[in-house]
Image 1 (cartoon, rainbow, N blue to C red):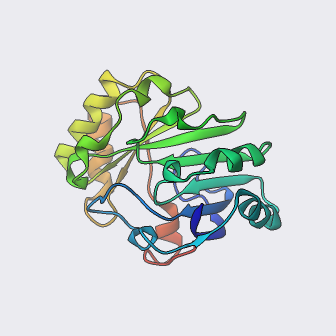
Image 2 (tube, one colour):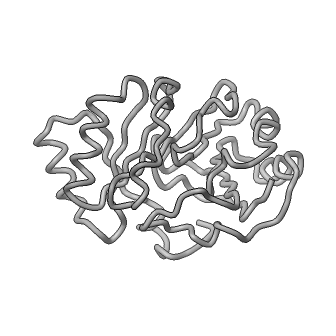
Image 3 (cartoon, rainbow, N blue to C red):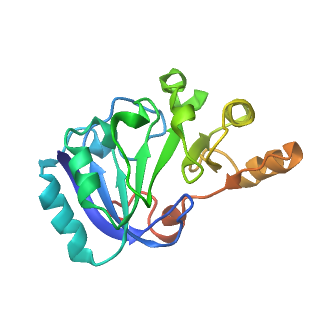
Length: 209
């Protein structure tokens, strides 16, 4: 597997926001979203075995792990790492374009599936059967940059999301967060609004946080 970086920080978004988490950022992504904030992970990284990655994770001494990217599901050998992480609270951040059943998760391991809205430029990338594979403990994330994105996300949440928790967050610096909150409340949409906490605490452009 090709790894761009491994670091300890707090989880900045999602259902586990605020908890200390070990992040494993893999190299490579099959999408090119207009607002991607980790373009540095497209190509650079080093080859590591599942055992090497596991040892780096265990050295930190924390029980929560986020496998992110890039796109983790592109990595050959990911299942071996998932199996090694039995007993950890693992989230796998995926862009939704690859079948979720490519790997099998263990107890305490969940998906965060990012559904790409129109302003991302990757609207057509979603693998729709993934919605049938989601479980109650999984998360479906929508990053919203404008009104069109919000309405698109709202329709998918209302029509497609049977299981899992929907979260909506703004494209950082592109839309006023309060506007999205007003739309959610006006529509009576049962979702979790979120901000990228790490970009508030640290420099928004900083790596390894």
